[in-house]
Length: 173
Ligand SMILES: [Zn+2]
Image 1 (spheres, protein in one colour):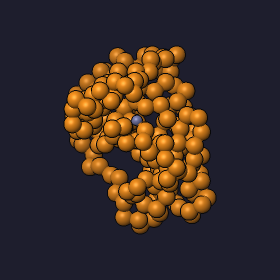
Image 2: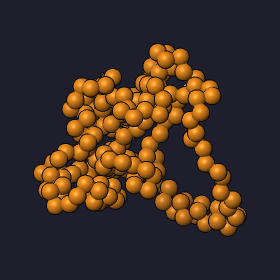
Image 3: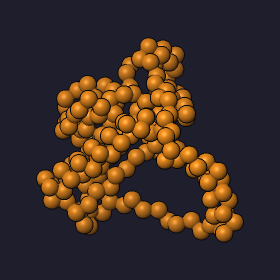
Image 4: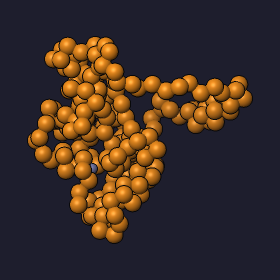
């Protein structure tokens, strides 16, 4: 059995855009009418697996498709949503980005209750992060860790679907 997103990318059903790097289609279970999913054609579990070129392209296309939604559906806003990793609610081991059209009083909720952090907790988070942010923006070319189709098939044979998803989503670079 293949990755559900790879499978989806091969079909033309509900496809609204395609180029050599990404495809975009209407979500089967939409949050609102016009809910778009963009997925890179290259299979990889999470955002961090993709190189800068693909990451940039995903956002360029997301921006343009968001504009298309504004023009075509007379909406008032969009939420750009990425569930990156199992802990973040990702369902399939293939990165994707959602564009969710919004209208006033559409009753969708994308909110969180703010956590109250002490000054110490904030300072600790800041210090931990800034140890690693020195190279951000420099030429950091990450090597794409691509799972070969044969390898994915073998894992799928050995394990049930849930284990397969978890194993791949936890493969953090
Ligand atoms: Zn895939």
